[in-house]
Image (tube, rainbow, N blue to C red; front, side, top):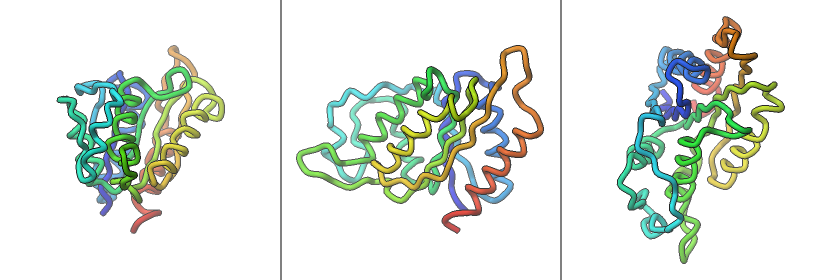
Length: 195
């Protein structure tokens, strides 16, 4: 059994990324991998202030901002796999996802204080689910490259990306092929590594 933390950065309930994430979550749970999902759009998530207060405590998040990031931190710290699900806006993730990533890179990585500390999430796995309007190799490539670098910096194990294209607002997004690929991605994440 592998515990998955799914951070959903879509602002649209029922939207394209939400639909892919739903299939992924259902398949993972059927395989015995519990999924704790956070809908970021519904949460109080403030941007990082670069105050570096988090660097003073090497055992905890340490951020003094009184918002919902503490809940996310605890879920990420106790999961085996972190899955980031976001539509691509201007070749990168949505604003709530970016805020979370900025806060986690400081709160989890104690590299930025007077002394270099540990990465509290070292060895956890990272996977991406994304949707975009361009072919993925032109629409989601910068997001994937950025997250590969983020993973290396944070000592995370990058496990891949499921990227699906939407052909336009006058077309249906979800189809049988996308459902199959989302389920297969969940199966890969749940069974290929760490078992």
